[in-house]
Image (cartoon, rainbow, N blue to C red; front, side):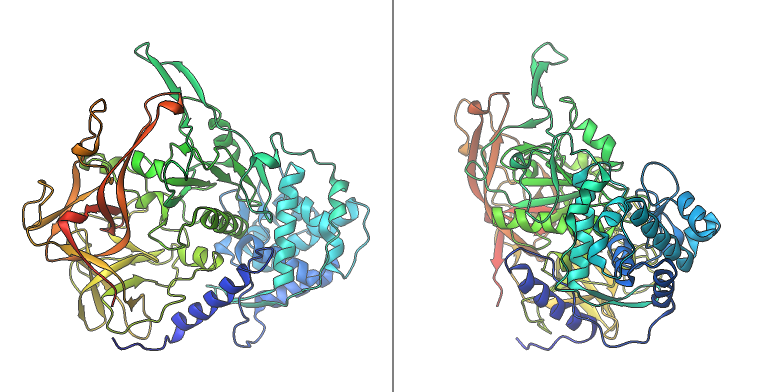
Length: 607
C-alpha cells in the first residue's frame, strides 16, 4: 500500500511522540518536554506573566512553570477547576490552602472578580502569593528559581509533606525540561529549559507539615518520581442480607500468575479526593486500585495490583484490569482536570504498563465509558466517566505514545484512527468526533444518541480505531455498532487519519457458536469459556450477546485472548479458580469495546 508523509498537526504530533518516547526510556523516567514550536511573537499573556514577576520580585520562570503545571497556561474563561481554582495560577475561592482569591486580593489590592476572570490579574495574584510565602518562611527573594522550593510547596496548599513535595517536584521537573505552547485562546508562551536546576528541597521542612497518615512507601506500587501514599481498601467478611457470609470490597488474587492484566481503566470519581479515600475503607462499598488528587497529583493506592478491585461494573474486565480514579466530574466540562493530575497519572500508567507488559494504546488504556455491559439490559447502567472532556490526545502525549507515533500513515489503509484537535467543551466533538447518519452536518446523530455530556454513543473517541466504510468528499464513514457513522474529516483540518492494521469480519457460516443468525456476528461483553470448559462441580456461566453486527462489516482488532472466568465466590482466595476456554477477539464495536468468538469471524491481518 502506498505510504505518505504526515503533514500539518499530524506531523507535529508524530515528531513529539518520538521525542517524548525516547526521553521517557532514559534512566529516571522523566517526562520529556515538547520541542519548542516555531518562533512566535510574545503574546499579551506572556508579557503579563513577566510584568507580574518583575513587580513582586519572583523569578519569571517560576511563575510560568506554575501556570503550566496548573492549566498549561489556559484560562478557561475564569471557570474553576475540579478543586475550585481559577486561572493559570489556580486561585481558590474558599476552603483550605494557601493560594486563595481572598489572600491574593489582600496582597494585590485587586478585586476578587478580576483575580478570577482577568489573566493579568490572576498572574499578579499568583506572584504576590509566592512572594508572601517566601517571606513567611524567612527566605530572601532570589532570582534563582531553585531557592523557592519551600514557597512552591506552600503554594500547593497540600496538608501533608508528601503532597507538598509531589507538587513542588513536578513544578521543578517542568522548569528543568522547559515548555512551549500555543494555547486554545491564541496565546504563545515559552518557558526555556533549566537543565542544571537543583532545587533546595530541604526547605520543605520549614513548612512543618505532617507525613501522610498511611504513607508506607514499601506498600505502594508507584514509580519513583511521584509521591504515593498507602490508604488500604477494606477486605472483610461480614454477614450478608440472607444471613450467609458475604465480603468486600475486593478480591485477593495472584496476578499476573493467576490471570494476565490486559487493561488499565481510567475513571473519574464524580467527587472529591478526601471523600472517596474515606469510602474505600467501607467493606460494603466498591473498590479501585488508585486515586489521584487534582491539586497536586498526589497518588493514593488502595488495593495491590495483584488483587482484583471492583471498579468497572464488569467482572471479566475487573479480573483483567487495574482501575485508576481521578478527582473530578464528567458532567462539569468547565471544571477542568489539572495538568498536575494528568502528569502524575501518566507517570503511574507508564510504570504499570511496563510492569504488566500492557501496550500503550486505546485498546488497552481505556475509560470506564469504554467498558461493555455484561448483559444487553445493563447497558443503560454502565458509567460514562471520565467523560468527553478528558483530553486523551494530551494524555497519550504524556505517556510517550502519541496517536500515530511509530507507524507510517497509510493513505489507503483500511483503518481510521480518530484524532481531532481537542475541543474541550467548546465544540460538539469534545475529545472525539460526533457521528451522523449521513455525510451532512445537519443529518441526525447516529442512532438514538445525543451529544449530552453523559451520552457517548454518538461519538468516536480520540485514539480509537475503526474500519473505513465509505468516503464522500470531506466526510468519512466508519463501521460503528452495526451501522455507518459519518464525521467531517476535511483534508486541510483532519479529524482522523488512515492506517493499516488487523480487523475481523464474519466467517463463512457465521453463527458457529450457536448464537449467531448466519448473517450476523454476535458480540459479547465478556470473553467467557464455553460450557464444556467448566469442571462438573462448577455451573457454567451463561454468556449472552450484548450486540451483533452484519457479517459483511469489519471491525478493528484490539487483542486476541483465550476465554477466562475467575470463579471467586469465597472470602478465601485459595478456593478461587480460573476456567479457560476457546479463543476470542476484542474489537472496537462502538464507543465501547466488545468480544467476538474466533469461531464466528475471519481475522484479516495487517498487510
